[in-house]
Image 1: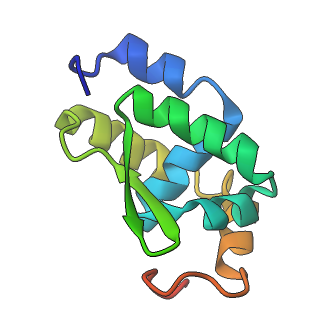
Image 2: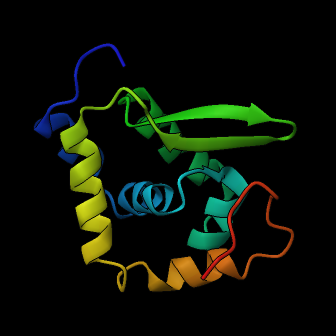
Image 3: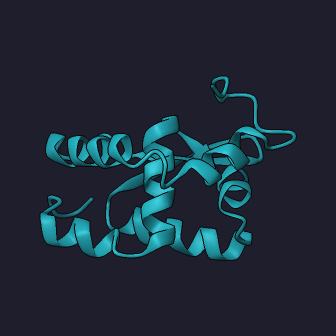
Length: 118
């Protein structure tokens, strides 16, 4: 992140259904890999990767490699208000993400580092 996150940057970045769903799923799960996001959103890898690149360049998400997997999580240097807004939006809109969450939990051969789905 080169500049501090501000409301304009945050909301412009999240003004796309795919990007907000990716972000809210990451907030909900803590960390997700590209393959999990493609399964949850039923989109191809290049499309997911393009949106992840935008979220990463905006400073909202960061990635890490673990073997063949690339995992994404909220950037730890985000202002606390950003994390609070995202958590509140996710908590208040679980039904909106219900289908994607079910797909994620039903994913075959899901990477091991994820907690059990409830």
